Length: 419
Image (cartoon, rainbow, N blue to C red; front, side, top):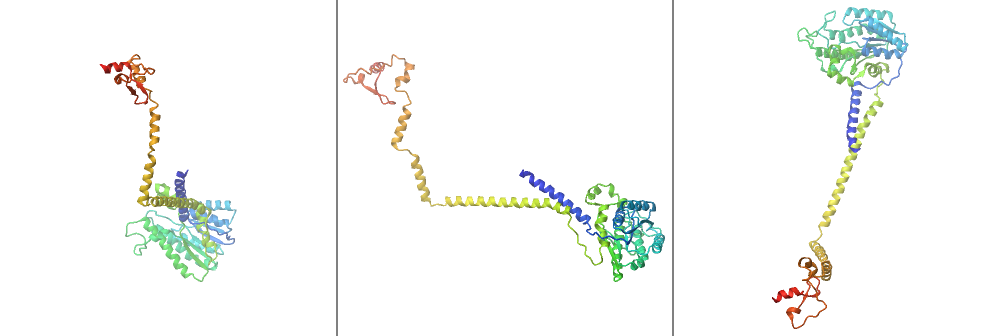
């Protein structure tokens, strides 16, 4: 079981890290529950993507929502869908083409005429990395739609926004503005080779600079100006880049929020909280859960290190004890060896007894051993007859070297010796 703990902990940490990365890229959820009944909100590019979900979220909060889109048919369909889902009938569609200064002026004039107040203006519409197109008035398309169109619209509605104070202006920018560079000598890319990425970054940088300057000029008027980076979301904004059909997109979109979630995460706190209130991001349950595998891995590694340190300390203690025992004087060592050697050598009596026991297992006499080979007649023992003492050669007793018994030599052996 222990061999599975580390791989599972690493896998859990990787999954948790991916969730945390997604939360970081996508942003946290807005905790605000503020409602906006009686507030009028204009959202450009609201027929799809983040703009549509932003309008849906604000309609749920009770506001009067005006969808300003280039394609009026799609805009009407989006407004109808939002009305059906939120049961808010104050959702209307208006035609607005940000690539046409004439369309922008007509839209602004109609809003000033029909609407008593405008509390929130969300400049959401944008185009990203399109071919080298130009607007109706000859501006480079990305700069014209993303910046110049919203610049004109904001200034045309500025008096209405001031009259409706406290009010807000929200400009959707992008983190790409950090790579932007504005060439005032060639804003429309007429003297340089057209770079879709550089043109997009230029337009978003212009939006950020416009926001900062407008915010400075509107201090004290009750109109708050904000720019925000919406994060990464699956929308139609990248339709000109081909990212939706690439392998890179398949990987990166794993970390992207759906535009329905994105609209709820980034925008509401910008224009719903009263001016001066600080927005504090909340810790989501998903973020906490994603940290658990990392904590388990950390605890496992700490326990493993502690066990290794404990085992090493035990080994060191054992080695030190062995060294202490081996460091005794040489005299004691020699005495112990002498004692051991002397103890291994048995006494003389014990050795003789052991020899006697071992020899007792042999046959009682040589005739018993050799009789099968020489025949029984040659080995006849005359134990009852006493041989003459005078005849040493014939009556000499033979002591069995094995048994120690005094058996006389057989007659056949005597005859052989006499011959």
